[in-house]
Picture (cartoon, rainbow, N blue to C red):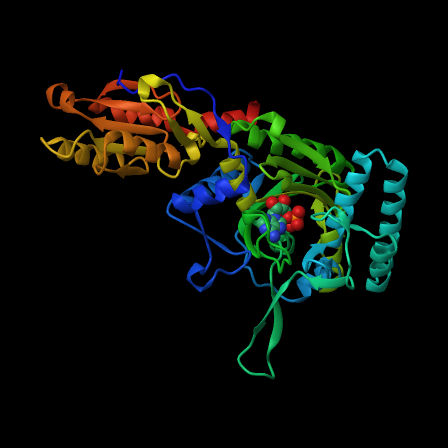
Length: 500
Ligand code: GAP
């Protein structure tokens, strides 16, 4: 056992989003885009620790979907698509937000969020009748689809500004289209407006028959895809929660119409299990039915996580019926029905969609597993910041250190690094005291550290330190690879997803 073994009191999670943002910048997880030019709102870059963590989140999702299910296959469709896709999907007509500005403080809000916050406050104060009246009037104004009606509602009801707790001096309610537009074509005459996809799902729908036939699938089956999506959002206040450019992990599950509700419930359970298998505390996850359904959904729930700034959606699960396939069939004039060999009939399958945001899952993982711990006196006391990142997802899996930078220890440590890095993502560090090196790797989430010390020169053993328990075991160098492979084997995680 090493001298560092301590009793660790369970510590606190980040109390604020600011603490997470600061950690992300300091340790190279996430940086604001184009910062030297003052940044570009709603766009972020992933740094040396963030990029591998994000890749591992996607890897975990892909394995849980494609590797674990014989009837789910992967796809990688293009970001740019024929403009008609977005007409058929309903995005050109329906994919917009209403927003409003409080002229007093010049703050802009999405109207649904302002009204929901106010109604929640009224309810919390026991003013149920008033809350109901406000909500009904708001829904009626929304149904009109006219900005004049919504503006009149805001003024007549003296809607409260959520940040001021008092009625706002509301300007006109306006509409913001959420899709990014660009142009394809070399000359003015053949220029064509195209959109950056606002969801990855449509690439799956327009390819579904190709995929089904080439992979010889039968209903029920799924198509999984991970990729970038773009939305011209209006308000950016919460770091990776609302971005203009972000990534989605979407799986579309094609089922017989009469089985769609059953599959919808089943996928809610399966998706919750995906988070629980990583070690998320059940009390910080919840399933919330949607208050407003998207234009394509018959039923929808969000999986929400309790971030430092409150409950927020990380994933949506939608029962999209045959809406998308029906619309694509209509707009493309191509038959998109599936032939069911058991029923001997042609039909449009119904679709259950699971749609998780990579960036929001990334932020949820940081919020859940980054903790500030008090160490006991035996280890010199003080605090350590430890990212208890699920070990399979850690940006660095194994750190290799010589105890000191002399007496031949670095040479041995380098040889160990060379051998281990054929199997694992490793870091080699010899600068600073060993304590500081351990602390740095605690903060970035490295689950295991191998230290070469003077005893190594005598008996070919090293210490293997566990980030969470701080326990150090002595292990023979030739046994290291097998031991670490056991510890980092993905099958344990995947078994939990399947069975827990
Ligand atoms: N295909 C369905 C769909 O796109 P959505 O609820 O609009 O549904 C799914 O988005 C997920 O994508 C959300 O749960 C969220 O995690 C992520 N997401 C959506 N908009 C986002 C944004 N502006 N920034 C970051 N993530 C976003």
